Length: 196
Image (cartoon, rainbow, N blue to C red):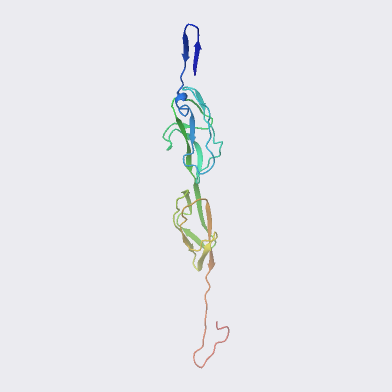
């Protein structure tokens, strides 16, 4: 702000220059979604003076990122800077300060079980990050039984769930084996009873 007072005999000027006159962005706090796939970053329209208190805004724009959960803010995209939670306060000392959303990857549970007359080979309980793959499991039938299917529709006894994006619970089903007994008579004889 520049205030000049013109008197009859002299010109007196009181000059105070703020950094924001040169670049309004310098004294602002900007929020960055840092990989967000939906929602809006909060907007802080305040022009701050150096050393002024800043209140960190919350995730008021419902930022989301597929496969991740919002955690807090950080001065570095990779989380290596200063972390701030919603509602924290600090004195601004850095021009052009950007706060980046921090995300934690979602984890999902893969649970496999065997129905009656069978078992599961492999890790029946797995914790898998979003987008990652589980490890193979195999439905093993008991003696005299055979594998039918998993109750979530997978038809192969061995399965590996890939690109996981949610919890999976599956139970293998088995059925008893059936056999055919066929009887026949040779020349000059016959079979009494059910031959097939």
